[in-house]
Length: 420
Image (cartoon, rainbow, N blue to C red; front, side, top):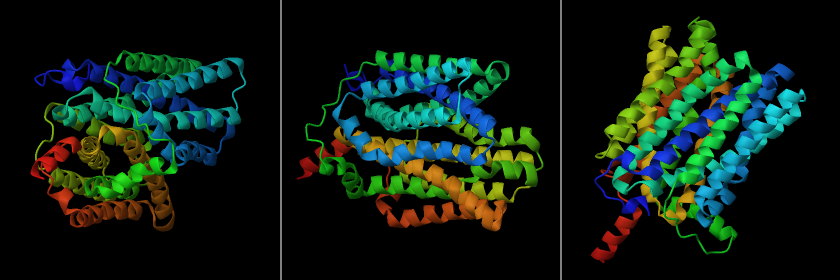
């Protein structure tokens, strides 16, 4: 039975499919984050090359770009739970192969790159499809809370995964990848236990027209185009985290411990905010609140750029993470409720492409600007640019600015039909 058919009086915990989805997301992301620590450390230990560390990001970025059209089409034609399970099975297999290679002593640069590419391909399918499942696990009225809770699972894993992987690696490196395999298997079990009504798969043939339908759909919906493009440009400009080693060493003189605190601050701010939003969701004036959160994000970036105090810098990054969490929850929820189920896979794939591209290109942009002008001007330009983008998008997308409540696409169709 679909969660949408469950009584509307229950909270998130009354919807078991969402609970399984939440734990599946938590386990898979902890495993991914911990495995990333081992892979990064192993590559640098073998090659001693910073460029090879950069290739890790590139090898995961390429599948997101190349496979976008295929990912969305597959997610809208087949059972999304099966797709997620297959992708997580690839994660588990890579973790097992890495464990075996470490035990046998034949771990190499080439093998690590092959594993990274396989993980990147699986992640390109898993994340957008997983996002598409959220709307199938709760009724529309609970979507803001569900998205906030789903975000909290990600942030918890981002905080705990690297810490757990790094701590365990100090005692037994091979145990980390083995542990990751266990987490991935646990995620597969959680997804398998989900019981949701299957969406009706698209029966259209796999043509270029159907593959590009997601882009046409986003372009024809000003709200979707607004939130997705806003995410692209704000994250593209706000890549301060890529330069944290420079700030920790040269500006704040805080050393490795300070770097760890700086890296944790945005995730902690985002996690606390996501937990609050899962209990007290944003339900009114969502357009204005989204733009306000982007403005706070930009202002916090400016404060961080100008700060010479470690506590102030940590506080600014925590506020940055909190503001980003509010914006992400609103944008993610809006994309879900504005998109009919038969299009969610393709729209989610496009959204993932834009977010993944902006994260990667944002770090690249920050590095280039830092090389030209210095770290402080680079982050300062990004913060001011975020403020400019927020103001510009408010003027370009007035319908988004005046948006008051989340309203499903199906409900608007019914209202328009009734008026006609």
